[in-house]
Length: 250
Ligand code: 13P
Image 1 (tube, helix red, strand yellow):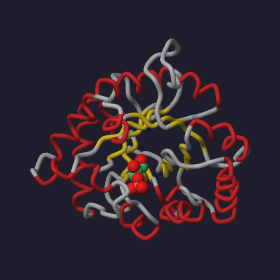
Image 2 (tube, rainbow, N blue to C red):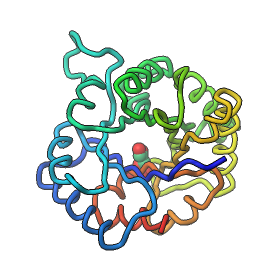
Image 3 (cartoon, rainbow, N blue to C red):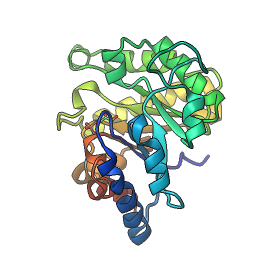
């Protein structure tokens, strides 16, 4: 059984203006000079998707969205459908990020519908999960994470349409990271669930770690069993910082 191809994905969140499009050119240059032994993805705000795709044309870096609506089209002011992202040239979309779950009250059922909509359009859904500080300190981490994954992952998930991202909420943007053992425990539990549910295909679905990943801790985190890449926030905004994480796979 082969393992999933590593993916290092950047989530720019609500950051970035046209002036930041040059980061794409710089990143592709760093990769073409120094190499990258993993897939590389940037998920900017929707306003920058076309510009990043244009700046990155012919390069290795793929572009994705940060969220999509579960419906194909309709009266949903301000929302973006998976079909629209696909139409622009995206290959991935993040769904169920903890910031969307918290800021927009998204439930795992909502996330499931969004992931299914993405898959229908031929996008790969990056389905996020992760426990809060309080859930970890009360010993509920595995229960919370497994429940989120179970409820958020559509029926016909497979390597070609799904990636899971484990992002402990307390590690996001805080500089705090779980120990390698803690990451290993959660990723192993997610892997077991995926295999139980999807058989051999479950062994091939990538599981990313996210939360304060930077160049200085990437090698250790990416070396943990069942960690198949990273979902990076702050350290993905500057090409040089992000490339420092990609280098964990050299
Ligand atoms: P940071 O890398 O800034 O902690 O953010 C992680 C994250 O939320 C990526 O989706």
